[in-house]
Length: 231
Image (cartoon, rainbow, N blue to C red):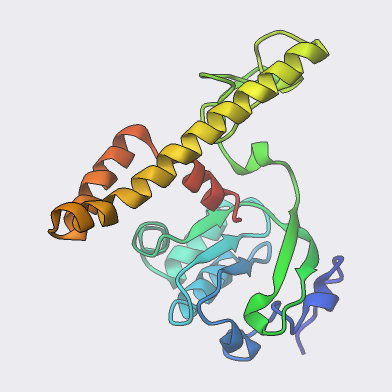
């Protein structure tokens, strides 16, 4: 018999979006975003679960249950040769070195795929992503934006040396304005391929290729941040 975690929310969510076997009630969630909750010391098992789920959905995230050790990687390689290349690059499955400490069911849909959950992770965002630091403060690169596009630091959190409340409010406003501009640029670029086909004809994939080249230059930071945080 499998033992269910005694962490908050696990028992309430079990069988309602949280399950052990992807071939049990997991089939009801075909096509939905899937999160693999790993167990410390069994990273290879989490990799195997992700591979087994590939036929049911393509948007998969792995939370390893804590820091991935060299032994974890060695065991995974012994069981799934070439896993790192296949998982990360071929299948585009994100891996996070974090453990889930709480699950909260935020929406109760009439159908299984309408369910929504909020996961509380151990540690902090700082431990989940690699961000430029200046001592204990986050380094600002431009317009309150950190070294990772889409993450803004305002008030005492950043390294501009100011600690007063008025400056904190100003820095927050500047960050919001910059974020809105970035989002509007990305939304515009997403519409370009279809609009070009309608106006000029041709192949939408060709225009999309041109946009992808632009993304490589200017970055697609907000979307990548969204993936990084497992949202």
